[in-house]
Structure formats: C-alpha cells, structure tokens
Length: 64
Image 1 (tube, rainbow, N blue to C red):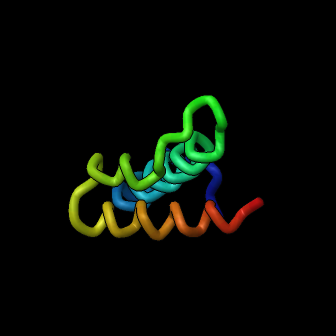
Image 2 (cartoon, helix red, strand yellow):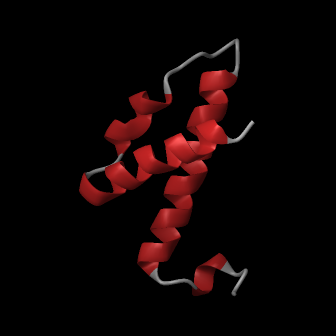
C-alpha cells in the first residue's frame, strides 16, 4: 500500500478527500460549540460522491 497520496489515481484521491470531509463533518456535529448536522455538507458533492460521503458519515458516527 502506498502512503503517498499523490501517486493514487484521481478517483482514489477524491475518495480520500471525501473521507476527510466526512470525518470533519462528524467532528463538527459532536462539537458542542458548533452542532452542525453532518448531512448539511452533503450538498458539496454530486451523485456517487454524495452517496459515498453519507456512507462515510455513518461510518465515522459509529466511532466513539
């Protein structure tokens, strides 16, 4: 497995960025000073990436 994200194909790079955004959205949702629903950021993505974002949000919500 490569740890250099620049060597990944463009599609994989986009997935990594979506995963990071989902993790950050869940963090903001849990932060008592922000309390912004993670789904509110799903509109930043279209089609398949939006579905992937929501899937990752659910994944990160399960992490305590």
